[in-house]
Image (cartoon, rainbow, N blue to C red; front, side, top):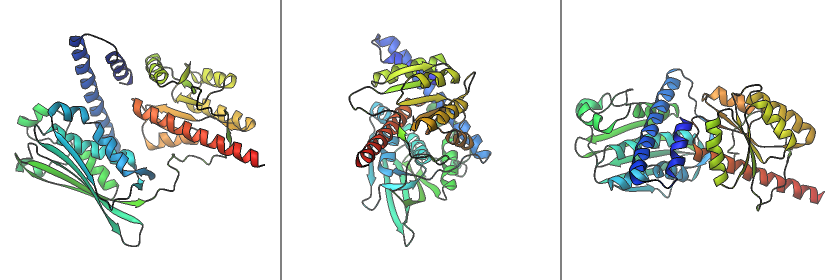
Length: 378
């Protein structure tokens, strides 16, 4: 799916005639729908197996809401729907919780509202109430639309897996019927509740309440085994392009990532297996490594371990991002314990990948400056 979506996106950035462009846009939309279905089925299987866990990391509520809503801008414009959001003044911005899963809930609810609304508006509201003496808040999110509403016959089963509004509507709008079931499960894993009010033909409001701690102090990076404070291998220069090593045995993914990264002014070298990646790292100086986990000759975990062992002798550290099709919590922990700094699941989301690269490079530069300042004081 990474290859299909990536190649379609690259093709659409070229100058092509209107008719084949529409064909490509339709294909990209269909591929995106298929990916969402696959992700829904994967999440449902993880929920059924008790493998889906809730992270506790600091994040911005307002950014989370904005990122979720921005995904629907093209569809809102196409359908000429009005969208607005309201965040109460009492809502703290930085909280401790699972940003990825909260965004997933919001995407499901906003997506349903947009899907089932042909005219009118979609409105997102967030309010908060402080829990006395705990440093926590009860946050209530609500998504209101002026869409088709829900018939009484469906209200009792709406949160069940594969349940949809009756076929006279659902065949027109598509979907798997998993989004609300997944949202309910995630909300309950967070210790919250979810409910809805709806009138057929007049629209719906879906609301959920979760309790989160206000926390802007902790390190937002995933925590693996303790890492010694070390000087990064390169002295940063804001003017020069960053030099990245991409270790990936899938030629299509390498090609797509290479094009996208070079457009962002990164210099990119390629390694087709873990052994080659380690050899190139030994000979070159890289600001960051993108490391596929499953590769021939030497897998990504083994290559990372070998790099970290040599870094202990050099007294430096290169940021390494894991890329893997394995999406369970224990897989992420194995990557972090091997010495990787961040973790990206396949199919690769290119926006998420770029954000992870920028964040790690920002931290990399900050650590270098701090080490340089300390050396100057000594």
